[in-house]
Image 1: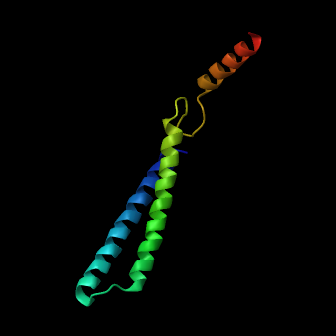
Image 2 (image 1 turned 90 degrees about the vertical axis):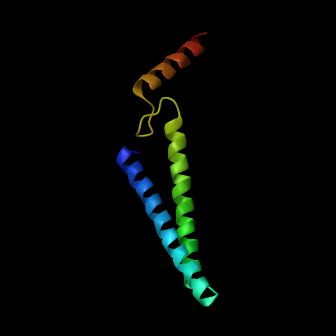
Image 3 (image 1 turned 45 degrees about the horizontal axis):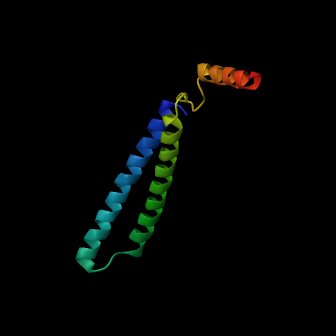
Length: 95
């Protein structure tokens, strides 16, 4: 995954959060005015919350993959890392 894709996902997460806050503020002001909230707002909040959870899970996966030593931004091991692992495996078979 490229840095551009990661940036896009972070922006999508931020946009979803801003949308959630906007809908929730509308819901709260409606509760203050009417004493109850429109069920449509609750449905919207549920959908946005699910989308936020999905974005968060994906960001956690990306963070885990990129936190591993020897992994480049595309999620693939560095060539040197692969070569060193291959050399280790060969030496272990010979011993």
